[in-house]
Image (cartoon, rainbow, N blue to C red):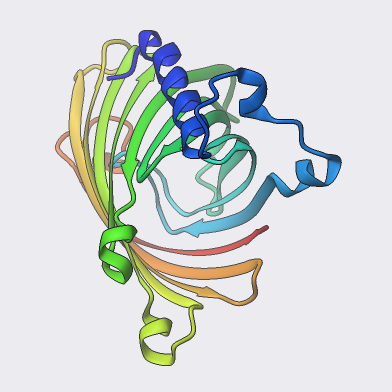
Length: 267
């Protein structure tokens, strides 16, 4: 689980790892962030924007709404090789009159030490039906890139902990992802892939959840096509299940199968 105690040591590890990963042993903060020119500043910025359609909205195994559209924007800045900060917004709105609306603001730092990635972030969840409520959550996530060893067959496992201050909620989640470059295999061109992921977790809330907690799991598969260097389209199918249908699920459903479509732009 995540706690405030983890924040400072994690950032220290990230800063140190980014400095050594750049080939030098300097530990000075000034050398870490460097002194780039205006053009170099621009090159360090990356951004993406997109919108998803989901026939159901399922969050951590729980169906919170029926069909929704979910736009979002993400901006990141690379301070040094292996160390970047990010900030973004994600929304979720009903398309069938169900009345669900959500706006999330998030920010964080990510560092890569070799094949290991460490992500420390914060999210503020707000809901259009109750503008007075804002849930505050922090996360600590570790993932591992195996492409150096497995090439086109690389799987990327992760484990993440979340702490929701508003509801004293603790969530532990783990999973694995794989992207099969099908167009590369068939046509020797790298523009199409099948992206598969699986996850499982356990959540427990000490406040605001009568039954205390639940366990959940899910899988997804998406066909992604890169139309240009900046534009990607994808369609997919998902499945999720949980062992407690009484909490925050539409009609108490414990098993959900749904589909999605997404367009995204990025540079």
